[in-house]
Length: 309
Image (cartoon, rainbow, N blue to C red; front, side, top):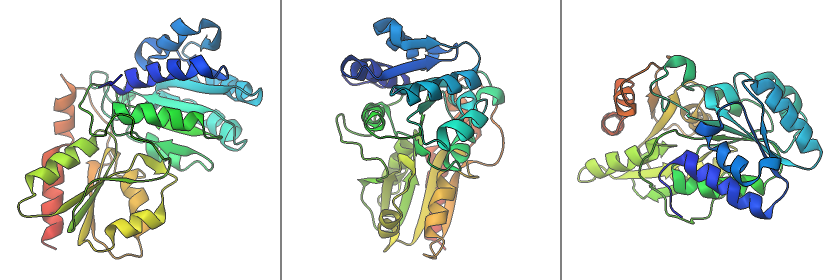
């Protein structure tokens, strides 16, 4: 079944996987109706744990469950999943290399109505800085399905970042997901745009808009960590410049990760992302994205800027 919402894709995929793998358990922090943990609760109530508004405790319980051979998925808004439980994630799960999967739902600006306190613009930076942590940011609902299947089959700590809202898929249904491998979804020769999450679709639209004058390669970076350094270097080898696009702060996220890889390649880089500021509330998601420059138009400007260097 095809989904257009990452949360629905996530929740239903957990139900599907839970049917065959009894080790999978799900923990929610009073947000199961939003994270879609409620779908797992309905299907397997004996393997769902409602922990209340207590992310730190939820994370510690998940660590204990992992040590008994379970595969725990913890669910909360992204800003709380990593922020409120950082100490437990670092000290117990990451240092212990425990098999806990942390789902940060309603990431970026996607919880548009609740403002800065509920919008995670720094979660990728926090999670990718933690040793032993795999960090995944699927492009769309189709890729979310495959990413969840992949993380169940990997051993060790993992963070999955999901959007709250519906939007069109840019990847194909049932496309195999390989952790750590960037995927070229449009070929080009002059500018390479590395994008993640909802910005992948905008990067494709931007490439289409400039196609008559600029050849743009669009790369979906759905694994922020580990990053295949050799693949990234090969993707930019013959290009003029690089653009990165993310619904996240330009500090510590995808742009930073790409820059760290390409620091010796002498390729100019332009960043499209949140400019080191907190979010704010808006009437709708599109308005908030527009306000912060997380748009196709911003990517087009960045591409054009790189071409005249």
